[in-house]
Image (cartoon, rainbow, N blue to C red; front, side):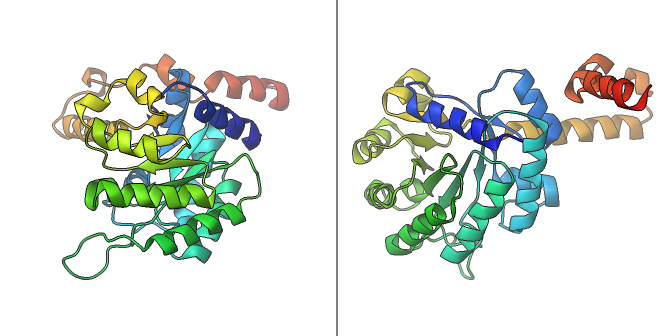
Length: 286
């Protein structure tokens, strides 16, 4: 697998002047469908990993090995650069180093490391943030662990939506100074916050979903936003489709009358059936 080519394509996106919506993918089939639809970037989030692997909510119950294995399965199935949410790196700065090593080996093109205290600590305080100094340590550790210089290391914070704009900006400045390639702001609510973020750092910005006024990709691009997430609806839609299909079958609907079942041609494309038939003929004499 040529992971470096994908990483260079992702870096080209960061260096460009457009803003892209990534495809939220969670397994090989969803990844191939995203590629067939022409998405330039895939996104594998911690929340979708928890749903896919554990069927559990996003409480950081998944392990690094489980996350990396699923990321590898996705990367093996398609050729689109994959951005992944590595949460807090599964521990302290030394754990961050191990996280980068495993995810680089799994073929990801970019990974985010955040400064959230995870998993959620005991008590009513909810998710807290590390000190900026500890966050800088995590970023420096991630950069030191990288072997392929084309792998993109992205700093990330939820401070914009949980503490203050000033705190988020201070963290972004510190992590940018540490050398991260891009910065992911979670919780930007309006253009004023984005303007403050863009003015604070000179590296590319990645952001999660925001208010309707932040849906204009031309505006986002002008503020150095290169990737803007829209959410993780595909896995939610897949869960609903499974429920509806199973319920209909449980209720006695004949298989031929089920709604929403893809055609054989669709499944053949998604599973790359023609490739397998060709290999069978060439190598098995079929």
